[in-house]
Length: 255
Ligand SMILES: Nc1ncnc2c1ncn2[C@@H]1O[C@H](COP(=O)(O)OP(=O)(O)OP(=O)(O)O)[C@@H](O)[C@H]1O
Ligand SMILES: [Mg+2]
Image (cartoon, rainbow, N blue to C red):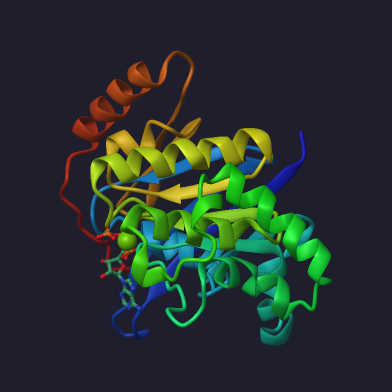
């Protein structure tokens, strides 16, 4: 199995030396190609902090993160921006679509920035838009499509470059339940058909039940991990049970 992510003894401390706040402590885990991994945990547990470090947006205080063969904690800013563009795909809660561009141009934008030949762009576009069920709205503008469709357009834009890793922070957070279910259905399809590797932060047990494996973070450390074996419904119940076991409160150790 090809390893895509390797997080090794990672810690993150914010604040001044006189008043440091440990947000993540000694986190280690790995993700293999084609996995769909969820990250859950109470508010303030450090989920977004972890995702920001995987996204190369923030740097760990201690430890290393390898994505593919590269240690992203040792890269310079210029390398990082190239790396982000080529190897990572982002799906966030607010989709960040350009309102002045059509759906088609929004999706192709990352390829256009890379000066991909038009033929290849069109091929990539028809492939991802079919998988995500948005091939009939390619000529529409973001203002004319539903919120669920916008999120699927954002997902198409994130995957059209075939990134090694797709990172999603609460991708269903602003969707109604029908649109959320649709997005999750399509994300699962991307995962299965494209062998896309996805790491998704979510609060929501239903959303998380689409993952294969979930890491639970509490107070900045990995509290537990569950792996889906039976049906999605069974996994959903396991997620709910684990959420109950973790509880909601958080406190941070002052180092
Ligand atoms: N730049 C920063 N400086 C200081 N503290 C920070 C900074 N960013 C985050 N924190 C603290 O780190 C902790 C974890 O924050 P984080 O946003 O990662 O939590 P989260 O698990 O994503 O929470 P939520 O579920 O509410 O999104 C919080 O206590 C937060 O206040
Ligand atoms: Mg968060």
